Amino acid sequence: MFLQRDWIEPLSEFNVAGVRYLVIGAAAIAVPGEIRGTDDFDVWVQRNAENAERVRRALAAFGAPVEHLTIEELQSDDPIYQIGVKPLRIDILTAIDGVEFEDAWANRIAANDGDVSFPVLSRGDLIKHKRAAGRPKDMLDVETLEQAQG
Picture 1 (cartoon, rainbow, N blue to C red):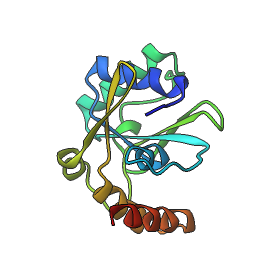
Picture 2 (cartoon, helix red, strand yellow; picture 1 turned 60 degrees about the vertical axis):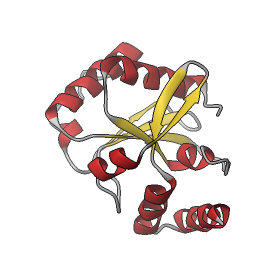
Picture 3 (cartoon, one colour; picture 1 turned 30 degrees about the horizontal axis):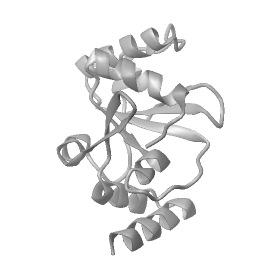
Picture 4 (cartoon, helix red, strand yellow; picture 1 turned 90 degrees about the horizontal axis):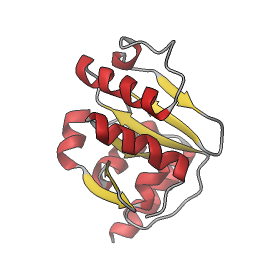
């Protein structure tokens, strides 16, 4: 798999810090080989105090501006912390539609890009999430993923 360098570096910092996270969105769709364009990179982080501390520490090590990002924000159920600008923007999410983190973590798949390994939302959980989100592009993704499943 090939990810933008700007996306690999924070994943590497997440790994060093022991962050529990899952790559989701278009990058997760690409893992089984279904490529589609995207203007951001979505990462879903587990929502608890310990992981929030790790996320903040990893983002700081990456060089992201975290001075106004609180541990409480990283534990709330709806924020998206954004780093950078499209098309290389990174979105850090603490909740997604249709799937609970613990269930998704148990079903995760491993992917890598060069020397960096990272956990990815499974195809089944990706389909559940995309269905629950329900946007037109999500429904196209569901169709693509289901056709690829055969």
